[in-house]
Image 1: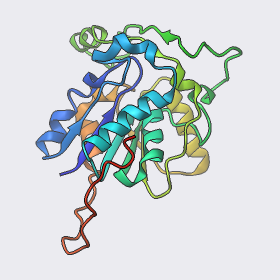
Image 2: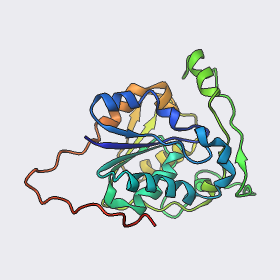
Image 3: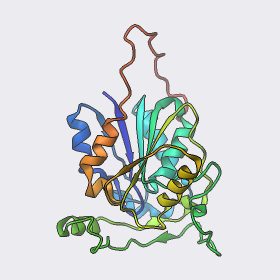
Length: 246
């Protein structure tokens, strides 16, 4: 059994993985899809989020308190900021980071550095209001679009203003982009950087909101990242401790 930790993108919550989770559970895996502070059922706490550390603390603590190991850590869109930061903080717990059409700045860059830098940065404590999903994109049917719109919430600016650390070299990274993501999205800048560097990535035949609009494709991608089973004759791991929770 593998532990999956799924981190949603801007304006969404843990509910964005609702249609992906059953595929992973049916395959016998443990799935955690938290709503980040200020999102989903925690949307009223959005003013508490003044930086990336708030979310990195939250997800790191989830992994440590649940004593999850060999985690497949997945960040969709803005969630890539969080998963990169968490992998840098507790790399010994992470088997793989999957960047799903994600905003992944180069080491030390910020999310606001993906694309043209605005002439004036917003105040750290502000939040951007959610707008309804585009009805003319062909990505959603009417019922899904209504369902998503009813759950969207404002997204805090603070995390986009903080430098993002690199995922440590010992942690495997998988990049997957969506073929129908509109130009100018942060993930398109990440993809362009990888292309320039000659680094490999996968392209899904889906729109940007793939966890909601193409859950089977996303689930197949994630299941392909399940770590191989360890050698049963290998030396057992040390007993877990609470080190790192303070």
